[in-house]
Length: 613
Ligand SMILES: O=C(O)c1ccc(O)c(O)c1
Ligand SMILES: [Mg+2]
View 1 (cartoon, rainbow, N blue to C red):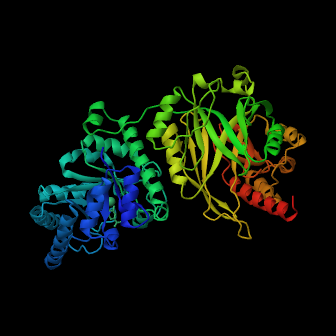
View 2: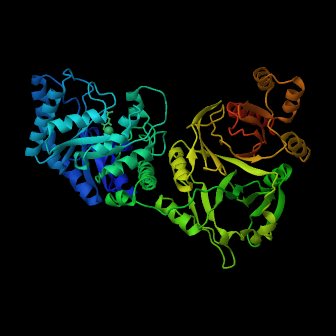
View 3: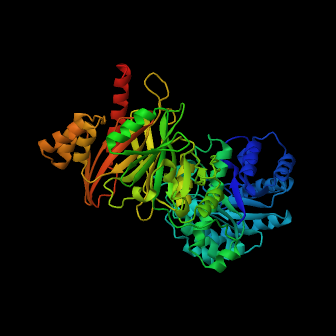
C-alpha cells in the first residue's frame, strides 16, 4: 500500500522533514499546518520541493473546532475553511483533515452537525477538494469512529468521508471490528499510531507518547487486518506525536517509521484472506519461522585476557583460536561465545548469531526491514554468515544448516560442541540502547525474529530511569532485553560512563556454581546487606539461607510459578555476566533486583575508582 507520514512525527524544518521522508522511501506526507506556517518557503515552493523529492502531499491538517457550533460561529468557521481550500490549491493538495470539535462545540445535535459537515463538503466541492472527518478520542460530542461515520453518512456528500486513526479508536478500547461496515470509498484517510499503556488521560497520552506501530501495546496488527478487510486502498499514514521523535535525527525516525509500516502489512497478511490482501496490495517481505535459538554471541573486547579469564571462571573452556584471525572460541556446554579482540572500545556484545532454516531468506527479510548489511571479508575456505546491523548497531548474523560448520575454523568439531544435555544454557541477553535508537532496535528485532514483547518496565538507577523492554520468542528459546539508557549517563564528576550490557547464563544449581566460579577466580558483584534484610522480611526466609546468599552475592525472587536465584559478575569495560537459576516454571527476571544491581554496580565502580582498582 502507499505509505505516508505526518510531518509532525519528525524533528527539523519542514524542508528537512520532507527530505528525510524522501530519503527513508515514503511515498507521501501529511502536511502539518504548524510546520507550514513557520516555513520560509511559499506554498508553491513546498509543492515544487515535494515534486522534486517524489513525495505526494496527501493530507493537509488539522482544521480544528469546526462543527457543532451556533450558526454565526459556523459562518466564521466556513470563512476560515475557505482560506485553507485556497491554500491547498497553491499546494496542489486535495484532502483536508477536520478533527471532531474538542474546543468550541456547544451544539450536541447530530442533525445540525451533519448539516454543517454537508455545507463544508459543498464548499469543498467548489474547490475540488475533499474533507476527511476524524473523531478525536477527546472530542466534545463526537469521539468514536462510529459516530463520525454516522454523521458522514447522514451528511451524504461525495466530498466528505472519514479519517480513521488507530490511536483514537484503540486508546478508548473501542472495537475496530465495525470499520468493515464503513464503505471503503468513504474511508478517505487512515492514520496509524501505537502507544504504550501508560494509564494516563487521552489527550496528553496522544500528544506526547504515541509511537510507531509495533512499539507500543495496542493490537496494531489486528487493526490493520480489519482495515484490510474494508478494502481501503489509500495511504497508510503514520501520525506520531512523540517528544523523543521531535529531538532525534529525522532520517533515523523516518526509516524506523517505514519499517513499522512494512511490519504491520506483513503481520496483517497472516490474518486475512489472500484475496483481501491482494485487493489492497499489502506489502510483503520474505517470511521466516519465528527464531528460537541463538547460535552464538560475539563479544568484542580490548581486554581479551581479562575476558577470557572471566569466561574460564564461569565454566567456559577455550575451544580454539580462529585459524587465520584473532577471534577465539569459548564454549560452555551448549553456549558458544566468540571473543574478538579489538584495539579499543571496551567490551560489549558485538553480534548475535541466530539459527534459521534459510539464511539467505532471513537476510532478505532483514534487508526488507531496512537493515544495512555487515560486510566481513572471508576467504574461500571460510563460511560466510550473512549479517546486518540493527538500528542500535548490534550486528545480527544468520546461521543455517550449511553454515553450522563454522566452528571448524576454530579447530573445533561442531558436532561435539552441540550438547543437548547441557547444564549451562543461554538464558537472556541484555543490550543497552541509546535513547534515540531504543524504539527502532526493539521494533527491528521484534519484526525480524518474530518475537513478542513483554510489558515494559522502568528500572530506577542512581543515574536515571532505565526503560526496559523484554522480547521473547514464542517458544521462549530467545529472551532479549533492551535497556534504554538515560540520556546522560555520567559519574558524579559528570564524566560519561558506559551503561553495561550483559549475558545471562542459566544453570541448575546456582549455589554450587557460585562456589566453583568464585574459587576459579570470579569476582561477584557484592550486594548490600539492606537488600538481604528486606528479602528476609518479604519472603520469611531463614537466617542461614540469607547469610549464605549474601556471602555468594545471590539475589532472589519468588512468585506463584516458582523461584529465581541469580548473581552478577564484575564488569569488564561495558559487559558483565549473570548466572541464573530458574526453579519450577518461574519465567520472570527478578523484578526489583535490577535496581539493586545498578546501584551496586555504581557503588562498586566508584570504590574501585577511588582506590585505583
Ligand atoms: O491532538 C490533536 O489535536 C490531533 C490533531 C490531528 C489528528 O489527526 C489527531 O489524531 C490528533
Ligand atoms: Mg489523527
